[in-house]
Length: 430
Image (cartoon, rainbow, N blue to C red):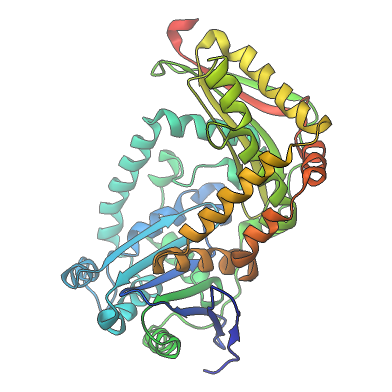
């Protein structure tokens, strides 16, 4: 198993190594006494059909329930007895598993991580036990006002793209899933060409590559198979052409929630996302941002307000969320729309752009301090885009945005007269 090593001459200097079976390895030696192995699988809830919505997250739970070589609980026991840590997360576009170990333990523990991910046994008994855990997680999610609000906003943001569905799936679907469906899902989609293995820490890069490669040889499920993904034929949804409004009553809320969303480019159009990231920061990141200063600090119309440019693989959402008294919902919406309108007709001051540039540069430095930070950065971009370059050049892309770029992005993607809005009000304020 040989390949050309590609080096990136800069502060970050990972090496990229591709195996003949399609799996990508990214490694970097870092003088910190730990090693992180992150396995990024380009399989999340977006590849599911409605009839198995929640399968990717359920499978994440089942990955830790044993293999032919490891009894249920054995993986966690061996990780913990060495003082290592492990965890996982499922999103719309990927599933991420990782361990962080001492360098001396990496050669022993890394193959265990690969064994559980590639060779999960998914027994009927364990499946039924874990189904109860997942159903309880769904119920807790439904009891969380923030998650309920987000789910309704995503249903507003997307009419047909899978991002409108919850990653956890609905209780009605999870209660009907069968173990063989999960085995088929795992066998079909957890294939080498869907996986990026990233190892960062205090071991030589060639040793990291060798440990991962040998760990893969010991696994069974490493032959190339064609991926059939639900979202492979989907296209981004068109922008809103009018204000589309939904209102809900939530008896558990003390304050109203107001969410405004715009459909914007996703990772598939990454060059279009940078200006929107800057606009999100100008509007809602920090006390001196426009919406926080105006609506919270000066006019005291909101209890809190935040802005995010959320970038999924296929399409993103520009997302503004506010908590306020129910009698202020309309005036807050109108004020936000006016701020959006201002961005379209007035150049952003250079001082505001400079503030964002400083914050981004500082965050990038902080996000490179630990092996797990770097492994996450490399794994995300390599898995999602098949390219490490955006992991390094994000600050430069932000630095390059000027007032004209920001005005053009606001005009193109953020209409003050066409967006989705969800208002959720407490029942006692009817």
